[in-house]
Length: 101
Image (tube, rainbow, N blue to C red):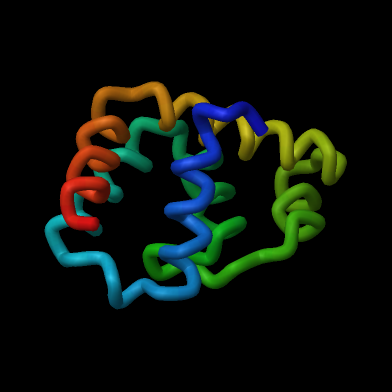
């Protein structure tokens, strides 16, 4: 995982374990962020992290439904995170997160 995606990854892991810590407004921003991905990639990321109303799926389940190897599915999720991490939308969300801490 590239360094630039680590903050996003950490935030999504935290969101999985503590979903109540995210305001309705922040959830709305996140929905817009994830809509920047193609629908299958968005579903895979949300399912992998088990966030935003999606149950957490094992990587092998995500890979199987897409007809990929586990490694290829993980690479696709990492690529999606990288795509999101470099957007102005994530940078705005990140600045809000940092200003609230």
